[in-house]
Image (cartoon, rainbow, N blue to C red; front, side, top):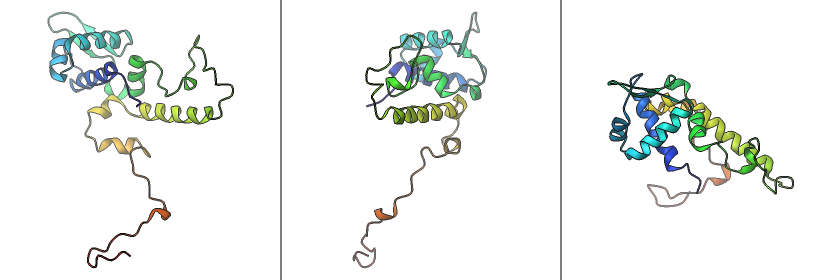
Length: 170
């Protein structure tokens, strides 16, 4: 199964809570209580988000964490990459400086396909912003044209079904 780490999931949950604060700040304790993310995990994730420049920290009586930029300018791709590393399903989809390529890369016959798939995932995550995640769900499909919309059934897939009135297949 392909999935993000729990800490990345927590990071997205914490960031959406900060986005709901609309420019305000929240303490780590407040964020943990509001999101039910364990306090030690919230603290660890927020420190990583601070180092990545996605949140800012304010000291003092009214201190806490806030978004470094408006929620509409923070893409899900950027958020996931800051917590998880480069977004890709396969090693050949991401080459970082100093990273060794897959030993099969030079002879892999599906490498090009994996690159297309990795690119599609990066594009989808790049189209979604933190503002989209806090908006009502109906807003999302229009931003993700072609993603999440059911495909038309192929003509050959029209299987006869029993008639509701006669019980006879058509």
